[in-house]
Amino acid sequence: MSITKKLSRYDFSIIADWIPSQSKVLDLGCNDGELLNYLKAEKNITGFGVEKDELNWLRALKNNIDVIQIDIESGLSDFKTNSFDVVILSKTIQSMQNTEMIINEMLRIGKQVIVTFPNFGYWKNRLQILSGKMPISEELPYAWSDTPNIHLCTIKDFDNFCNKYKFKITDRKILTDKKSVEIFPNMFGALALYKLVTK
Image (cartoon, rainbow, N blue to C red; front, side, top):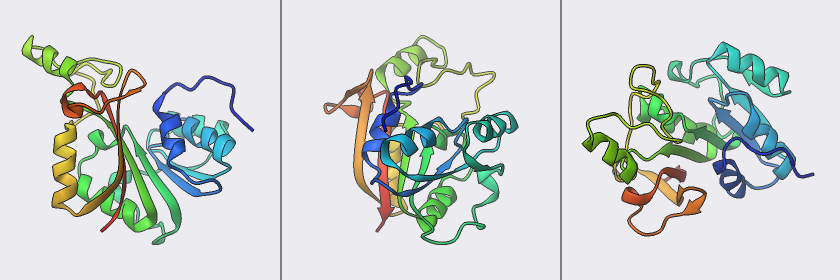
């Protein structure tokens, strides 16, 4: 069965391409559960969500998602090792305090991890900074005064981070306006998607 409703985020279809059919999937920061429902329809997955925000948690419940309300930062010790095929952290990592701990926990829980984040090094972001303002864009929609983002990073930053902590990158896709970016991705890519496993 294929979903006909238009997705709110174009990167969800890329994430789906990386997930084997009938996988057991955990979505951290699942919002209203749109991605999990899409994966259920397209890949026949068994999906579970984690969401801190009470309003989003209630929306996920109304959308028939098995979701628990906890703060990812408090730890994921309740989840058993290798209890999921895939663990997803989608456009959430930049709002986390302890990035290394969270990714290590994701890699403990899941056989593979998918992380997506807005690339702060994208040229339009750089241009806004040069003009004296914090960037606002489709990928970074918040003003400086109300943003949840505390650890914005570039693609180069994340590559170095993975190398430092020995997170093995098995696939990477950089996108701008729904198109893949191959040349100078740290400059011309707006959104980064990474697939990781332990080394």
